[in-house]
Image (cartoon, rainbow, N blue to C red):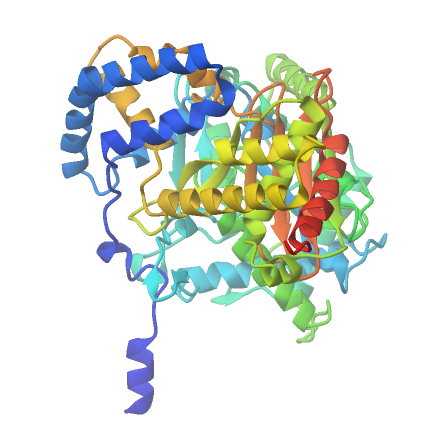
Length: 612
């Protein structure tokens, strides 16, 4: 009886989905008030007065009408934003997504049992793959624990998109194909695709009802590796996924028109659990310096990763691993979760497989051989050249700051995430001599299918503090007070954003309603201060906390003269990964990281002063 009770009360991963609250529409008055505050750091008095007039006119005129229409829309949808966000942020975007949209990061195993070591790629690969497949089975059985804040469950829908999910290019808009099913919902694909030296192979990971073991996976990976290293390279069809979206859509249509079998092969890749990439490189990495490994994962060989796949698990010749993921179906926290799970399992098992060495007689991997012609080969070489040209322009600086971490900031009663955000504001201010409009990801998973909201970290309070730090006539005590005001402001805004009271997505909704109704674009959105303050995806600092675990990641900057700035927080360290474009003469990722580290010291020093 007790056992039965225990079983029936066990939570299932997706059990709360139906009871989650709908995404709210914030008050128009509040949103516009917050918007006005956010543009202040970027305006002189005259510009601000003009924007104030535009906002007042919007609020009492067309804005109110659009807001009412948005409320109507929200009545009929549990998440009024979901479809719009997917389209505007991801599926309608035409620039190559593999470099510009995907996020990537290294696996943390190199910090403990798996330091870089040649000759370990295949054996380690079989173990890491097996742990990933176990996680897939937990999801299928709905045994991945529900994320909660206190006792409040968060939306888990994005976890459905981790496996067997792929973006498919369209001429004007892409689409997402998701083949994953839980056990109670029915059959789910159980094959993976391995890419190596421009060739693609497929094999099932379930044999006779059981998951294949690491020794069995090792046999499959060894077979592929040997074949690819003793025979000519393949055409590298995967490189097409790094192309501009409409060009890739046309190339894909041509490929399918060439031979109907090509479509079946593409669908094999789309529906696969994940793509396992075998790279020949051996990027350098230490627990203090992630720069080379992150660059290799974000901008590695385009012929061995499927840019549209929700999960590319990448293995390097020196036994170092990472992932490269399409951002459209989910946000980085899904990847952080599985990466941490796998890393913990590898750590618990001391990096070894401790089970049976027996290998069953399982079918060998099957090669996916596409029918290609001169045009396809020319499309591939054009895609590769374009990708490598753009990739070579990316600068990555990723280091660990090891003097202190979360423990010390919490001891000083400073929220560690806010601590890093304000340090970055000060670093940018010192490097560029002006405030930097900043996007920080806030999560809205309290709500049904909630994803993110924009938290604008560059506040009036933050700028005042930065100015005080540069002014020798300001006393340390006054600087400390200004810093604490900036902290309080940031913390309150983050709370508001997570509670569905941010304003950026609300403004986007109003703009999209106007477009759908065929109305002219309201002046609010054409006002120069709108984009100068980051509106319309023009933030010079694109930032995100990757979490409090051993997992790191990075994205490219949102704008050419900007930075991508991802970080994770541990008790004893902060790890920061920053990207910038080399072709922009004014940005420098290395300098920004070093100045951020300097700001950490300055801030702690401010907290050490006591006012007599």
